[in-house]
Amino acid sequence: MPHVIIKLQTGRSDAQKSIIADEITKALMASANVTADAVSVSLEDIEPDDWVETVYRPDIIGKPATLFKKPGYDPL
Image 1 (cartoon, rainbow, N blue to C red):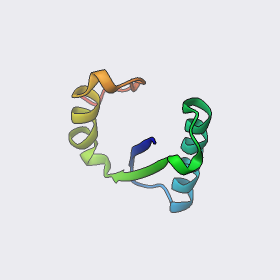
Image 2: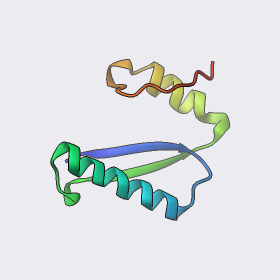
Image 3: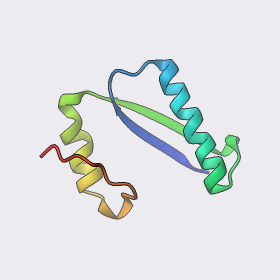
Image 4: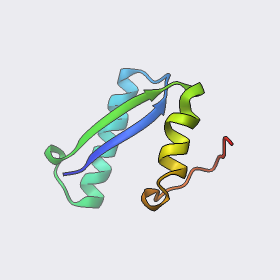
């Protein structure tokens, strides 16, 4: 039962977030062999000025073993 937490910079509409959640659900159904009922998706809005301290340092730099797709940017 996958639960996905997506952290996005603010600015997306609820309609865009619904599309993102639907597409993530479809991807997990196809790649993890689960049903839609098994998937849950949360989307967290992060202010751009908070991105480095809220996401980049703790989740990207701080958890390299869990990072399967590295970003192509370095805000530091």
